[in-house]
Image 1 (tube, rainbow, N blue to C red):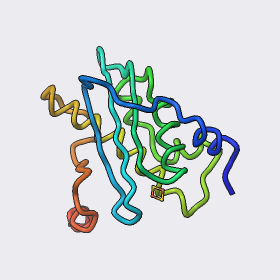
Image 2: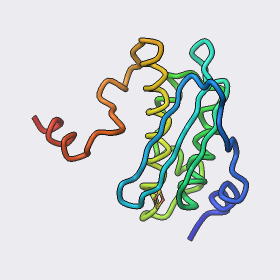
Image 3: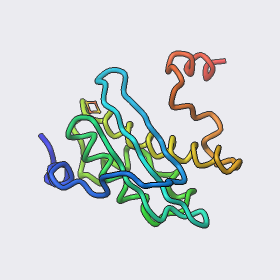
Image 4: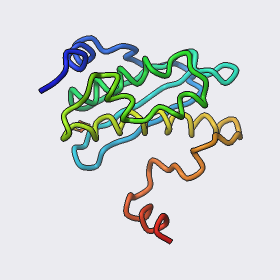
Length: 146
Ligand code: FES
């Protein structure tokens, strides 16, 4: 059911922990399963120089956060913004369909940490204008429809 890569990242997750005085911190949760993911970013000159995470969740969420941190480390903010949950799942050689939502948590955690960074520094990050990790998805759909 799980790829070798998923199992490997689950057993040996990369970049676990916290960053003291992180430049951006994002925390997201999935209301359905109750899993929580927290991501810490150290940013210098528009580049993510360090990233750590803490995930209280299922194996796929842990593997997804581990892979997501690997994908964004050393990347510019713009490049990190382009990383979707699909890219995370593909880098893990796939996730079972019922576990795809776990990778969504990783994408949201990155965006949420970047949003925190943009607020602290009073800057705008392209693509984050409408992102609100605390927003009720139902409200969001209504806004999109109008
Ligand atoms: Fe909740 Fe995987 S089951 S994130």
